[in-house]
Length: 304
Image 1 (cartoon, rainbow, N blue to C red):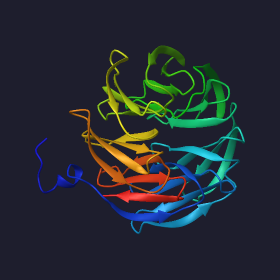
Image 2 (image 1 turned 135 degrees about the vertical axis):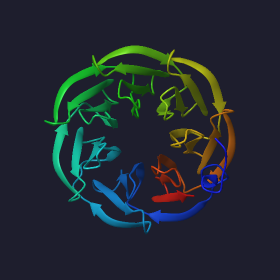
Image 3 (image 1 turned 90 degrees about the vertical axis):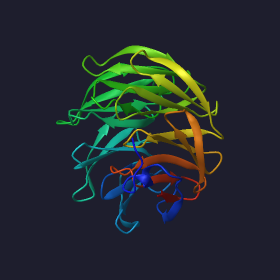
Image 4 (image 1 turned 120 degrees about the vertical axis):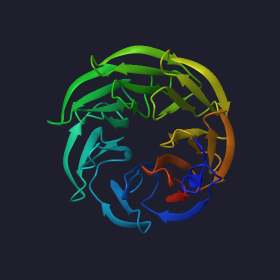
Protein backbone atom coordinates (compact mmCIF):
# COMPACT_ATOMS: atom_id res chain seq x y z
CA UNK A 1 0.00 0.00 0.00
CA UNK A 2 1.21 3.52 -0.85
CA UNK A 3 1.72 5.77 2.18
CA UNK A 4 -0.23 9.01 1.86
CA UNK A 5 -1.07 11.88 4.21
CA UNK A 6 -4.37 10.17 5.02
CA UNK A 7 -2.89 6.85 6.10
CA UNK A 8 0.56 7.85 7.34
CA UNK A 9 -0.47 7.56 10.99
CA UNK A 10 -1.02 3.85 10.45
CA UNK A 11 2.62 3.31 9.48
CA UNK A 12 4.99 5.82 11.01
CA UNK A 13 6.39 5.41 14.55
CA UNK A 14 3.81 5.73 17.27
CA UNK A 15 3.99 7.02 20.81
CA UNK A 16 1.92 6.98 24.01
CA UNK A 17 -0.31 10.05 23.99
CA UNK A 18 -2.49 9.29 27.00
CA UNK A 19 -2.58 7.10 30.11
CA UNK A 20 -5.95 6.19 31.65
CA UNK A 21 -6.33 4.97 35.23
CA UNK A 22 -8.70 2.00 35.48
CA UNK A 23 -9.52 -0.66 38.08
CA UNK A 24 -6.85 -2.69 39.86
CA UNK A 25 -4.78 -5.11 37.74
CA UNK A 26 -6.43 -4.91 34.31
CA UNK A 27 -5.53 -8.08 32.43
CA UNK A 28 -7.37 -7.73 29.14
CA UNK A 29 -9.01 -5.08 26.99
CA UNK A 30 -11.71 -5.12 24.31
CA UNK A 31 -12.14 -2.15 21.96
CA UNK A 32 -15.03 -0.94 19.83
CA UNK A 33 -15.34 2.25 17.77
CA UNK A 34 -16.48 4.30 20.78
CA UNK A 35 -15.62 2.35 23.94
CA UNK A 36 -13.02 0.13 25.53
CA UNK A 37 -13.52 -2.35 28.35
CA UNK A 38 -10.93 -3.70 30.81
CA UNK A 39 -11.21 -6.80 32.98
CA UNK A 40 -9.91 -5.79 36.41
CA UNK A 41 -8.49 -8.94 37.96
CA UNK A 42 -7.83 -7.80 41.53
CA UNK A 43 -10.73 -5.42 41.95
CA UNK A 44 -13.85 -6.99 43.45
CA UNK A 45 -15.17 -8.31 40.16
CA UNK A 46 -15.29 -5.18 38.02
CA UNK A 47 -14.99 -4.02 34.42
CA UNK A 48 -13.97 -0.44 33.58
CA UNK A 49 -15.76 1.21 30.64
CA UNK A 50 -13.69 3.82 28.82
CA UNK A 51 -15.18 6.57 26.63
CA UNK A 52 -12.73 6.76 23.72
CA UNK A 53 -13.83 10.29 22.80
CA UNK A 54 -12.46 11.60 26.09
CA UNK A 55 -10.14 8.76 27.16
CA UNK A 56 -11.79 8.65 30.57
CA UNK A 57 -13.57 5.91 32.53
CA UNK A 58 -17.29 6.61 32.09
CA UNK A 59 -18.53 3.86 34.39
CA UNK A 60 -17.44 0.79 36.35
CA UNK A 61 -19.47 -2.40 36.06
CA UNK A 62 -19.63 -4.22 39.39
CA UNK A 63 -20.56 -7.77 40.43
CA UNK A 64 -19.00 -9.28 37.31
CA UNK A 65 -17.55 -12.31 39.14
CA UNK A 66 -14.49 -13.63 40.94
CA UNK A 67 -11.27 -12.51 39.24
CA UNK A 68 -12.32 -11.26 35.76
CA UNK A 69 -9.64 -12.26 33.27
CA UNK A 70 -10.36 -12.07 29.53
CA UNK A 71 -13.22 -10.47 27.65
CA UNK A 72 -14.78 -10.37 24.19
CA UNK A 73 -17.39 -8.21 22.52
CA UNK A 74 -20.14 -9.74 20.42
CA UNK A 75 -19.89 -8.78 16.72
CA UNK A 76 -22.84 -6.40 17.06
CA UNK A 77 -21.41 -4.87 20.24
CA UNK A 78 -24.51 -5.52 22.33
CA UNK A 79 -22.89 -8.08 24.63
CA UNK A 80 -19.61 -8.24 26.51
CA UNK A 81 -18.43 -11.67 27.67
CA UNK A 82 -16.05 -11.86 30.65
CA UNK A 83 -14.34 -14.95 32.04
CA UNK A 84 -14.07 -15.18 35.83
CA UNK A 85 -10.94 -17.18 36.51
CA UNK A 86 -11.67 -18.16 40.12
CA UNK A 87 -15.46 -18.15 39.88
CA UNK A 88 -15.47 -20.65 36.97
CA UNK A 89 -18.11 -18.60 35.19
CA UNK A 90 -18.66 -16.49 32.10
CA UNK A 91 -20.44 -13.19 32.78
CA UNK A 92 -22.70 -11.84 30.04
CA UNK A 93 -22.94 -8.04 30.15
CA UNK A 94 -25.57 -5.97 28.35
CA UNK A 95 -23.54 -3.06 26.97
CA UNK A 96 -26.60 -0.80 26.65
CA UNK A 97 -27.12 -0.87 30.43
CA UNK A 98 -23.63 -1.93 31.59
CA UNK A 99 -25.12 -4.62 33.78
CA UNK A 100 -24.61 -8.38 34.05
CA UNK A 101 -27.62 -10.07 32.46
CA UNK A 102 -26.60 -13.65 33.24
CA UNK A 103 -23.70 -15.85 34.33
CA UNK A 104 -22.80 -19.18 32.70
CA UNK A 105 -20.98 -21.93 34.60
CA UNK A 106 -18.03 -23.26 32.58
CA UNK A 107 -14.94 -25.36 33.36
CA UNK A 108 -12.12 -24.86 35.84
CA UNK A 109 -10.20 -21.55 35.80
CA UNK A 110 -11.51 -20.03 32.56
CA UNK A 111 -9.26 -17.55 30.78
CA UNK A 112 -9.73 -17.01 27.03
CA UNK A 113 -13.04 -16.18 25.37
CA UNK A 114 -14.08 -15.49 21.76
CA UNK A 115 -17.34 -15.08 19.87
CA UNK A 116 -17.80 -16.37 16.32
CA UNK A 117 -18.36 -13.67 13.66
CA UNK A 118 -21.92 -14.91 13.06
CA UNK A 119 -22.66 -14.38 16.78
CA UNK A 120 -23.83 -17.99 17.19
CA UNK A 121 -21.19 -19.50 19.47
CA UNK A 122 -18.93 -18.51 22.34
CA UNK A 123 -15.74 -20.45 23.13
CA UNK A 124 -14.15 -20.38 26.58
CA UNK A 125 -10.72 -21.84 27.45
CA UNK A 126 -10.74 -23.63 30.83
CA UNK A 127 -7.08 -23.48 31.86
CA UNK A 128 -7.47 -25.74 34.88
CA UNK A 129 -9.27 -28.48 32.98
CA UNK A 130 -7.52 -28.56 29.61
CA UNK A 131 -10.83 -28.00 27.86
CA UNK A 132 -12.81 -25.47 25.84
CA UNK A 133 -16.50 -24.88 26.60
CA UNK A 134 -18.73 -24.16 23.59
CA UNK A 135 -21.73 -22.00 24.47
CA UNK A 136 -24.85 -21.37 22.41
CA UNK A 137 -25.02 -17.58 22.20
CA UNK A 138 -28.81 -17.59 21.87
CA UNK A 139 -29.48 -19.66 24.98
CA UNK A 140 -26.29 -19.04 27.00
CA UNK A 141 -26.09 -22.79 27.59
CA UNK A 142 -22.97 -24.96 27.26
CA UNK A 143 -23.52 -27.10 24.15
CA UNK A 144 -20.35 -29.19 24.32
CA UNK A 145 -16.88 -29.37 25.85
CA UNK A 146 -13.73 -29.99 23.78
CA UNK A 147 -10.54 -31.52 25.18
CA UNK A 148 -7.43 -29.59 24.12
CA UNK A 149 -3.87 -29.38 25.52
CA UNK A 150 -2.49 -28.52 28.95
CA UNK A 151 -3.39 -25.09 30.38
CA UNK A 152 -5.24 -23.48 27.44
CA UNK A 153 -4.96 -19.71 27.55
CA UNK A 154 -6.15 -16.82 25.32
CA UNK A 155 -8.40 -17.72 22.37
CA UNK A 156 -8.66 -16.32 18.85
CA UNK A 157 -11.25 -17.00 16.15
CA UNK A 158 -10.39 -16.81 12.46
CA UNK A 159 -11.98 -13.94 10.48
CA UNK A 160 -14.29 -16.38 8.68
CA UNK A 161 -15.27 -18.11 11.91
CA UNK A 162 -14.17 -21.53 10.69
CA UNK A 163 -11.38 -22.07 13.24
CA UNK A 164 -10.62 -21.27 16.87
CA UNK A 165 -6.96 -21.22 17.90
CA UNK A 166 -6.11 -22.39 21.42
CA UNK A 167 -2.56 -21.83 22.77
CA UNK A 168 -1.80 -24.54 25.32
CA UNK A 169 0.54 -22.78 27.73
CA UNK A 170 1.63 -25.96 29.49
CA UNK A 171 2.32 -27.91 26.31
CA UNK A 172 3.97 -25.46 23.89
CA UNK A 173 1.29 -26.13 21.30
CA UNK A 174 -1.72 -24.53 19.63
CA UNK A 175 -4.88 -26.60 19.19
CA UNK A 176 -6.94 -25.77 16.09
CA UNK A 177 -10.68 -26.27 16.58
CA UNK A 178 -12.94 -26.77 13.58
CA UNK A 179 -16.05 -24.81 14.57
CA UNK A 180 -18.32 -26.79 12.22
CA UNK A 181 -17.64 -30.03 14.13
CA UNK A 182 -16.25 -28.66 17.42
CA UNK A 183 -13.30 -31.04 17.22
CA UNK A 184 -9.54 -30.47 17.21
CA UNK A 185 -8.43 -30.68 13.59
CA UNK A 186 -4.71 -29.94 14.08
CA UNK A 187 -2.07 -29.29 16.72
CA UNK A 188 0.78 -26.87 16.02
CA UNK A 189 4.08 -26.93 17.94
CA UNK A 190 5.16 -23.39 18.84
CA UNK A 191 7.42 -21.81 21.49
CA UNK A 192 7.52 -22.11 25.26
CA UNK A 193 4.40 -21.10 27.24
CA UNK A 194 2.25 -19.76 24.38
CA UNK A 195 -0.39 -17.29 25.55
CA UNK A 196 -2.23 -15.81 22.58
CA UNK A 197 -2.49 -16.09 18.78
CA UNK A 198 -3.12 -12.89 16.80
CA UNK A 199 -4.44 -13.36 13.27
CA UNK A 200 -3.91 -11.15 10.23
CA UNK A 201 -7.13 -9.65 8.79
CA UNK A 202 -6.87 -11.83 5.67
CA UNK A 203 -6.81 -14.95 7.84
CA UNK A 204 -3.64 -16.33 6.26
CA UNK A 205 -1.07 -15.77 9.03
CA UNK A 206 -1.12 -16.25 12.79
CA UNK A 207 1.30 -14.88 15.36
CA UNK A 208 1.70 -16.79 18.61
CA UNK A 209 3.14 -14.98 21.64
CA UNK A 210 5.38 -17.35 23.62
CA UNK A 211 5.83 -15.99 27.14
CA UNK A 212 8.87 -17.78 28.55
CA UNK A 213 10.50 -18.24 25.18
CA UNK A 214 10.48 -14.48 24.51
CA UNK A 215 9.47 -15.21 20.95
CA UNK A 216 6.62 -14.85 18.49
CA UNK A 217 5.92 -17.84 16.24
CA UNK A 218 4.77 -16.88 12.74
CA UNK A 219 2.28 -19.49 11.53
CA UNK A 220 1.09 -20.25 7.99
CA UNK A 221 -2.54 -21.00 8.78
CA UNK A 222 -3.13 -22.80 5.48
CA UNK A 223 -0.61 -25.49 6.44
CA UNK A 224 -0.58 -25.04 10.25
CA UNK A 225 3.21 -24.77 10.25
CA UNK A 226 5.60 -22.27 11.85
CA UNK A 227 7.50 -20.42 9.11
CA UNK A 228 9.55 -18.05 11.26
CA UNK A 229 10.35 -17.25 14.88
CA UNK A 230 10.76 -13.59 15.89
CA UNK A 231 12.73 -12.80 19.05
CA UNK A 232 11.26 -10.06 21.22
CA UNK A 233 12.25 -8.86 24.67
CA UNK A 234 10.62 -9.87 27.94
CA UNK A 235 7.58 -12.11 28.48
CA UNK A 236 5.35 -11.47 25.44
CA UNK A 237 1.77 -12.16 26.45
CA UNK A 238 -0.83 -10.65 24.12
CA UNK A 239 -0.83 -9.14 20.66
CA UNK A 240 -3.02 -7.67 17.96
CA UNK A 241 -2.61 -7.05 14.23
CA UNK A 242 -3.54 -3.67 12.77
CA UNK A 243 -6.62 -3.64 10.51
CA UNK A 244 -4.42 -3.10 7.44
CA UNK A 245 -2.28 -6.10 8.41
CA UNK A 246 0.95 -4.09 8.37
CA UNK A 247 1.89 -4.17 12.06
CA UNK A 248 1.70 -6.58 14.98
CA UNK A 249 1.66 -5.02 18.47
CA UNK A 250 3.02 -7.34 21.19
CA UNK A 251 2.83 -6.60 24.92
CA UNK A 252 6.08 -7.27 26.82
CA UNK A 253 4.87 -8.03 30.35
CA UNK A 254 8.36 -8.18 31.82
CA UNK A 255 9.62 -5.05 30.13
CA UNK A 256 6.82 -2.47 30.36
CA UNK A 257 6.85 -2.09 26.60
CA UNK A 258 5.17 -3.00 23.34
CA UNK A 259 7.11 -4.39 20.41
CA UNK A 260 5.90 -3.29 16.99
CA UNK A 261 6.61 -5.96 14.38
CA UNK A 262 6.58 -5.24 10.66
CA UNK A 263 4.55 -8.14 9.24
CA UNK A 264 6.21 -7.84 5.83
CA UNK A 265 9.73 -8.37 7.20
CA UNK A 266 8.82 -10.09 10.50
CA UNK A 267 11.26 -7.78 12.27
CA UNK A 268 10.77 -5.49 15.26
CA UNK A 269 10.47 -1.93 13.91
CA UNK A 270 9.86 -0.11 17.17
CA UNK A 271 9.63 -0.59 20.94
CA UNK A 272 7.21 1.65 22.82
CA UNK A 273 7.33 2.17 26.60
CA UNK A 274 3.90 1.77 28.22
CA UNK A 275 2.57 1.20 31.74
CA UNK A 276 4.10 -1.39 34.04
CA UNK A 277 3.13 -5.02 33.42
CA UNK A 278 1.38 -4.72 30.03
CA UNK A 279 -1.08 -7.45 29.13
CA UNK A 280 -4.06 -7.09 26.80
CA UNK A 281 -3.78 -5.20 23.50
CA UNK A 282 -6.68 -3.77 21.53
CA UNK A 283 -6.78 -1.72 18.34
CA UNK A 284 -9.46 0.75 17.23
CA UNK A 285 -11.38 -0.46 14.15
CA UNK A 286 -9.85 2.31 12.05
CA UNK A 287 -6.34 1.37 13.19
CA UNK A 288 -5.50 4.88 14.37
CA UNK A 289 -5.09 4.04 18.07
CA UNK A 290 -3.74 1.08 20.04
CA UNK A 291 -4.81 0.44 23.65
CA UNK A 292 -2.65 -1.51 26.11
CA UNK A 293 -3.91 -2.66 29.53
CA UNK A 294 -1.07 -2.67 32.08
CA UNK A 295 -1.78 -4.77 35.18
CA UNK A 296 0.91 -3.50 37.56
CA UNK A 297 0.27 0.21 36.98
CA UNK A 298 -3.51 -0.31 36.61
CA UNK A 299 -3.58 1.87 33.52
CA UNK A 300 -4.43 1.80 29.83
CA UNK A 301 -1.81 3.34 27.55
CA UNK A 302 -3.16 4.97 24.40
CA UNK A 303 -0.75 4.74 21.48
CA UNK A 304 -1.32 6.98 18.45
